[in-house]
Length: 83
Image 1 (cartoon, rainbow, N blue to C red):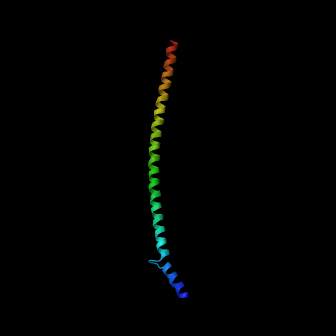
Image 2: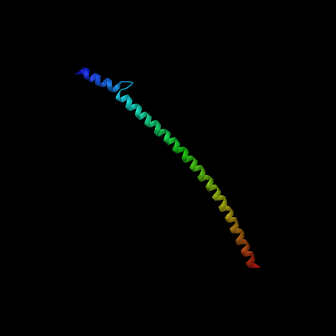
């Protein structure tokens, strides 16, 4: 009986082809795949953030120009009403 237990344990724990070793390798491969996917997603998020920042800066500049035009038009409108 003890010999059967030893054989079963040895087959599970065999360094090259044991079930535990194979399971560990499989899980390690999955972890590496998930880690790679996370890195790819983080790169995509960083690129998206950079695009949004550029768009925000462009919109902010446009808003400033429009506010200047509104002020100019309001000032000119007041001047024409006074004369």
